[in-house]
Length: 352
Length: 287
Image (cartoon, chains in turn purple, red):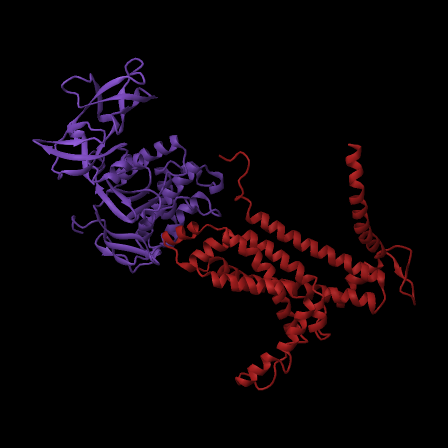
């Protein structure tokens, strides 16, 4: 198989339910061995997209190719995919061993080989000591590992995971995310994960597709997505909490005019007119209001402690910016007048 | 405490009356009929029981009743499960509503009404025979009533809703994702049905089966009306002992034997259910 054939290719994929469009014109190519996260708020069509790849939802238009081969005509049981369901969907009447062996029995694998493969898959997810248990005798995290082993054992060309960590508590979730990523790297299996959690997407992914209203807003590597969100929606979804609507002005040099009148010199090709400024709380820094390096001034409206850092809301006139700054002593007092310096390369502007 | 105990008295009286009646009936089974009268007399003994278990005709009726009830139960499972599955899993609400409506309607119409309904449908000049003759499938009317066939059809129609509605809920409670997971791992629709859905709902199949079996083994009206005197189940036999032979003690003994056999069979059902679900219910101490 030529190396440039995508493990997964979606071409003009679309799904309508009656008059409603659940997924519109999705185009995407995923290299072999990569982990793609479909990220978006609930109802954005990410689960429908995943179910179309698995074969449970028939697309209204477009094509799905796995390793260069169209799978549209294949029923779910014939597709080279395996899915870890949000509820894990283990078979309640079978032991852990039989759950994992199920797919192998259907493939007419010799009995001795089945036992061998099942034990290896269970060892991979550290569940080898539980093979005689029934699903009702396992915790949520253990059930998830079994669901994963059940899919891995049939060696799918694409492994699909629907909100795999949604039902786990925070601590276990973080542990499982790292473990899943390591396992994925070790096995080199191509994976598509659906999630609404941007932090989870950053931890797991080689590529992230941010979805809204059935369409992909941005398809990029995590670092690029984090640093260069393509638009206001992606920026806000990726945790850029400072979004200010203002104007781009060009009087000699380009600047961004805050609604309250303050002007910030910027470097942008956008045309003059309405624009949105996007800025992460971490890229704001305090300075003395009258210093040269200071871009803005404002008064402290609210402060709260976030571990070793302090989150401060600064009223700059017409807009409130949140700054996440290292904590020195007790930090600025509410009502105190402070200057703000902004690293030019860390701000982004979107046309409105 | 005293007031609480006092409140139990009405219930105790009620229970004493109900079970007392049974106990008296049970006691009568050890007595002898008073010759020439419908009454009974002492001394107590096991004669009636000995008579029943040494009478080939009585034993044959008991045996036939059990076999017939088992056949009706199996037929209810074979017919009722697919019916319940279609109701539970049909993507069309109309299908579900129509089937459920038909079942509930069956539930609400009385046994006697239905028995006469079947007579009209299955009789020599009934709708079914007319249709068969018109289609040229048979040369002369098929005997569909006044034999085992008629009783079987009517009884199956009577028990089907009980079974279908029992398993319907159980099938609906199997998450779609579990069936999808099986499909996803390579199982076709049939394999998924037989290896996932059916085994998961085995407890409901057994409960529904037990219900149908109890209804079938105690059937009285259908064999009486549609059996044409040729089909006699244990209930009809007991009835005859009471109101034809006027042998109250022997009727009582037959009833006790029937009750013991029925309860034993039901215990077997419940033991089966426990066996089938022995590991599925989360137990204390499980992680």
